[in-house]
Image (cartoon, rainbow, N blue to C red; front, side, top):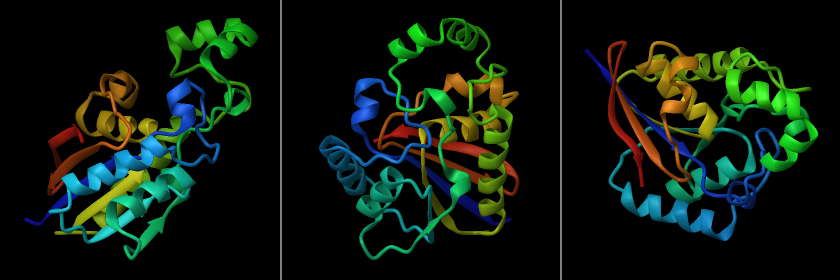
Length: 199
């Protein structure tokens, strides 16, 4: 039975991550600390022999992938690996959202999975595109070691899908920090969590 090693890496810190501003689909770069985080992760995992690197096309993810795996690493970008699109909440601080959208904010806090943020992506469509894309990557790479550089929401969705009853019930059970690696090994179709939030 061939195994597949899947390395899920969240991008390094951005200024928006640092200050509590939502930037799901907004394209932002790493800050200096985020670049140092990515380089530190590179030093920690330089023993990994990765056969393929996939990345969200957003700058913060591609920059992280390049810093971790080197300038010459062939990086395959895939828009299915992008973060959730927050619609009208993009670029807003949490306190600003609570002030401008008090009713939707309170509903989101209690039933976030079904609450539709104005202009946002449907949560179920988001998790479906992320999970479907990564499952196809795993199927297409038998016996190989594959890295996916993406975003916090994407990695939480994947881990919840693989290891919880449902994505909705497991989504917030995983704290995925910037520039961390979570490793999943597939024995056939059986996912095994090898490392989580490693830095």
